[in-house]
Length: 195
Length: 176
Image (cartoon, rainbow over all chains, first blue to last red; front, side, top):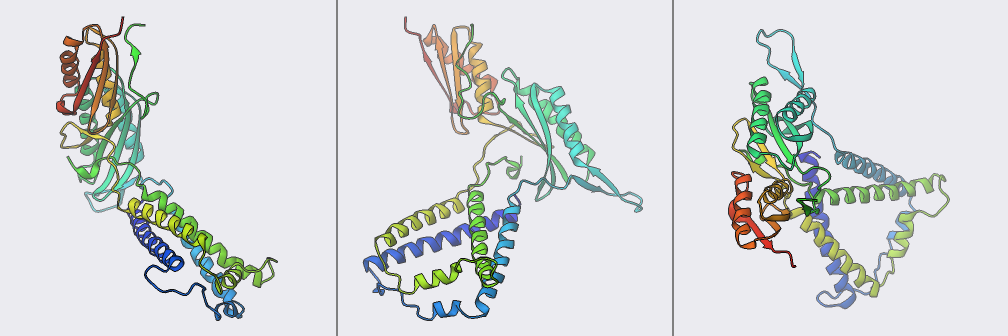
C-alpha cells in the first residue's frame, strides 16, 4: 500500500467518522428533542418529483459510474505491490543506459545471509522508501542462534548490497522473525529439556 | 540507525479504507441501477426513487436512536483507526552504518528460552516476548540459584539487543 493510499484512507476515515458521529447525534436529538427542536416528520415534497425528471437517471448513472471507478481504483491501491525492481545506474561515459534488477540482488542477498548465519527460510524483496529502494532480507532465527554471528552475517550482507550501489539509493534491511512453527501467541517453549 | 526503516504492522485504517471503498462501490451500483431501470434493463423500481419516496414523510422512531448509536460507535471506531499510529513489530539489533537489522520479540523469546534451558538446574523453560517485556518461566530443581543464573544466561544471550531490566524471570520448583 502506497503512502498516498494510506493518506486517503486516513483522511476518509476521519471525514466519514466525523460525519457518522455528527449524524448519529443529530438523529438522537431528532428523536428525543434534547437540543434542537426538529420536526418529527421529514418534509421534502420536491424530492420524489425530482427523481421522475428525465435527467435524474442519467445524473445518478453518471455519478454512479464515477463512484464505481473511484472505488475500484481505491481498492486496487490496497493490493500488495512491490516497488519496481529495476534501478538505473549512472553511466560514466554518458552513453547508453545501465539498469540493474534488484529482485535478483535481493534473492542473492537472502541466499548469502542464510549461508553465513544460523537462519532459515530467508527471502529477499524490494520496497520503495522516501530515500530510494530498500532490499528487504527476511529470515527465521534458529533457536540456538548466536546473535553476534547473526548480526555479523547481516552486516556483511548489507555491506555487499550497499557497496554494489555506491550512489546510496539502495539500502538493505534485515528482518528476523520466529520460525513458522512458533508464531505469535504461541509460547516459545515448554518443551522438556530432557525427554 | 534510521527509525524510518523500522518494520511496522499493517495500518488498522487500511481495513477502514477497504470498507469505505466497498461502500463507495455500493453507492455507484445504486446510481447505475437507477439508470438501468430508466433504460428498461432492469424491471424493478429505481432505488434512489424509492429512497426519495420513503424519505419524504419519514418519522423519528426507536429505530432512529438504535441506528444513531450504531453510527456513532462506527464513527468513533473510524476516528480511532485513523489516529492510531502503525505499531512497531520489531526491535533494533546492532548498530550498523550500512543498514538496519530488526528482530521480532518472539524470536528473542525463543533465544531466551534456549539460553534458560542450558542452565544446569532448569528442567523446562518457556518464554514470551513483547517489545516492552520478556518473561521467562522455568521449572527448576533449585529456584534460589536458578533465578540469577537464568537471568544472567538470558541477558548474556540477548546482550546489546534487549535491555536487561526488561527481562523478567520467574522460577518454580516442581511439587513432589
